[in-house]
Image (cartoon, rainbow over all chains, first blue to last red; front, side):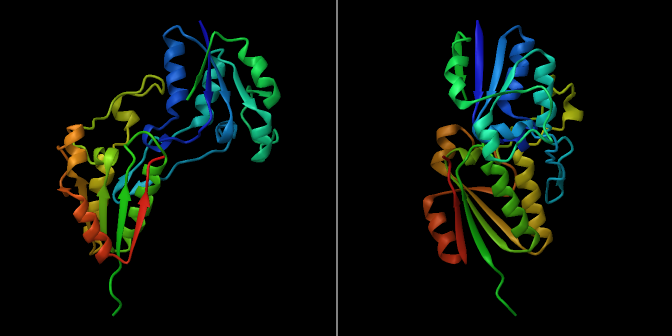
Length: 126
Length: 137
């Protein structure tokens, strides 16, 4: 069974979890033998920005030592042969024009999303 | 001498689910560092923020054992913020909505957190210079 994971909301608890929970889940389920791809849409397209840096958080005397590295985690999915699609319209809207991005994700136009769905048995929107 | 500000924050999100929790903690941290008197009314899922039984875990996806992953726990954030406020001459009066606690079995909390009721929020708001509500979506 092939599943497309749609991530449309970025940075949900990424500081607390030190990753994106759905990117993490996709890593874990791929490792467990699942067949997944990922579609980044909405503000989640920013996950392909290369220079994200959430380091330095502190509350009182508490310091974070392992901040999220979401670009690394997306690149890790691609290394595991998970296809990562990015909605080009959304990326363009926030100024991601191909510079300063991790390599590997495929751009897809919003008008092509319905056709993409045809390639999957199930669509999971998170 | 100017009166020390008092601020009230109303939190509603459960930990580990949204970016709002971290944003709220950042605001609390700023107020604590300024020595303000702070009230927090934790409502619904937010009563789990200071839940004492949160525990760290390893993260195989990151390739980290428990120590290296050093997973953040909001209960530690709450404790650190209370300590920070006190060290700066301020305070944090953190009230967990009691009925919300009962619904969730979340009565075990870190030191400095108490059980409260909506009446506490009314009192907080009346005594504060301002109140910020950070609701769930």
